[in-house]
Image (tube, rainbow, N blue to C red; front, side):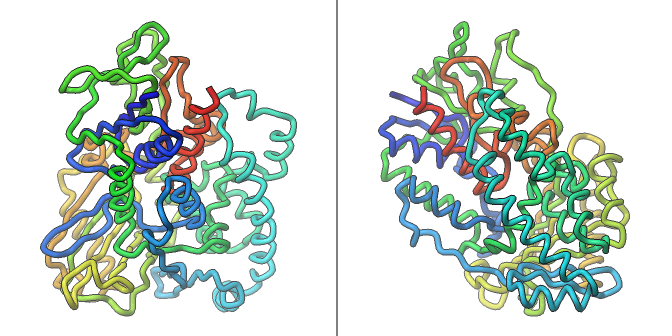
Length: 478
């Protein structure tokens, strides 16, 4: 059986490897000149830094799917980051998150007296919810929506309090708003609003404690080099600069694809792009044209520095006095906030291979609205203001330390094919999660499948890998 995959992001690459392991003949068609999609490097003058994802969660899930793909674990080396990250407040106070529970309790008692037992209750409850929720909702497809609304699932959803948002659920445990923010901001890892993302996503901040935050040696995007090597070893055909212009639909059957080089026929086709964009490839007037809510966008600054900031942690959050106001600007008002929360990634603290000797790289992310509400004509001015804030709060002399800088906005992301410039696929809202999210078999067209951040179970590298595994199971089931 032949399978054509549209798009060579992590979902498409892993799907190809898993399908090849099952004996299928697989081709990948990628419009860009390289594989990886969001998972790539920015490289310049001997510096390299991850372009997209930085925080590595659920390492055992990643290794599990690499095992299934025939990739030896030793080819992907991970280093645990502890402390997990530091949260720095405008008044200079700091709160350090660590997966060492005893140390965390001491830190909570120092910064948030009276919240120790609340934290222990949170961890205990979330551990049970993670085990149940992962098995019931992450490891299953809901191509048939009725499979989601079973009596046992409804009972479990109520038990998990899935009707709450992440923000409202965490407020049941912690009284201090800053501590509530510390256990709800993780929805931003997948482009979601803490006050609108279903409580199932509370499993993300719990996972930081239970499974840790990790760093892949050489950068997250070095994973692509490993996958690419095994695509070659498994004789999977990769067609770069092969832009797919149309899915060949005959009646209710997808028979292949049309690229700039001609028509290619396959027994099955897998779409691995930002899912709402599939509408441009289906000329059938009867095809569904559902509207989706995009995830948040990112203003990203990539920097090559003449130094390494030894006092900085690998991951840091520079918080604002009013985090909820920032979130309202991102997800409701559609404007740039006056008081941004800023995330920084400084991997040179633990990896000297990313820059010339004595030098370093810095990645800066500010959550911003996706869509067209902001014109980015003055992005340099905005970037300059962010640098000024970072200089005053944790990176002294940053402006003079910058040897080069690149700026990426949601407008750039949209040009690259991300829906409305959202950085994480469609938003993880209640009506775009679980059975309501596009599935690995998204339409009634025979032989057409999908994988990626906008497909159930959702965004984030290990979760997209889980989606690739669900895809293969669905293809095998038919």
